[in-house]
Amino acid sequence: MFLNHRTQGFILKKENNGEANQILLVYTKDFGKIEVSAKAIRKLNSKLKSSAQVFYLSEIEFVQGKTQKTLTDASSIENFPGIRKDILKLRLAYNFSRVFCELVKNQEADRKLWQFLNNFFSELNSENLTVLKAQLFYHFYLWNLLDLLGYRPELNSCVFCRKKVIPSGIFWAVNEGGLVCRNCLAKVKIKTEKIDIQTIKILRLFLNQGWQTIRALEIGPKSIEDLRNVSKNYFNHIHK
Image (cartoon, rainbow, N blue to C red; front, side):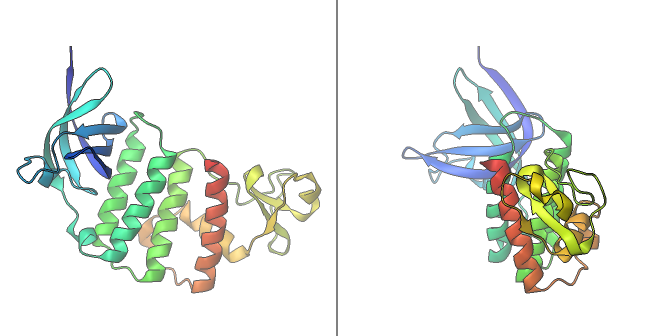
C-alpha cells in the first residue's frame, strides 16, 4: 500500500530524468531532505511545473512507493522574486543550496534547520547586496549552518591547553577543530596555518550575532579573501 504525504518544502535542486521527468531535491518541514520524482513535469501542459521551481517554498504532496517518492501535487507558497531577478543572489542561492545538500543528511526533519532555511531565503530575497556584501552573507550562513550541524570551531581558547589565545600567536588547525596557541604547535600532527585576528573576530561575530548586525560591518576585499580561504579549508576538512 502506497502512503500519501503532504508537507511544505524548499526546492533546492532539480535534475532532469528521462524525456520529461525531473528529480526534485527538497528540504521539507516534516521529513527533512528528500528526493521526489516529478513525472512529466517538463511537459508544457504540466500542472505541477509552475509550483515546483527551484528556490520556491511550496506545499507538496507525494506518494511513498517501494523505492521512491512521487510528486502528486504542488502549490507555491513563496517564490522569492527578489532572488530570481538578481543574478548575484541567484548564484549565491545555487552555491549555498549545493553546500546545504552536501552537509545535511537525508530524511532528518529538524525544526532549527527548517527555520534556518526560512531565514536564509527570506533575508536573501529582501537584502540589497554588493559583491562584497554577498560574500559576507554567504559565509555568515555557511558558518551558522556548520554550527547547527555540530561543527562549531573553537575560536577563543587553544584546543589543547584551553588557555585563551593571544593575537600575536594564533594558529588555525582544521583537523583539531579550531585555534592552537604557539606553545602547543608541536602537538598538531597536520600542518597548521597562521590566521589573522581580524578573521577570528569576524567568525566570532558570525556565531554570536544575527545578520542584521553583521550586515553593518565594513569589511574589505582582503578580509573577505582571508575568510574565503579559512572557510574553504574548514569545509573541505569536514566534507572529505
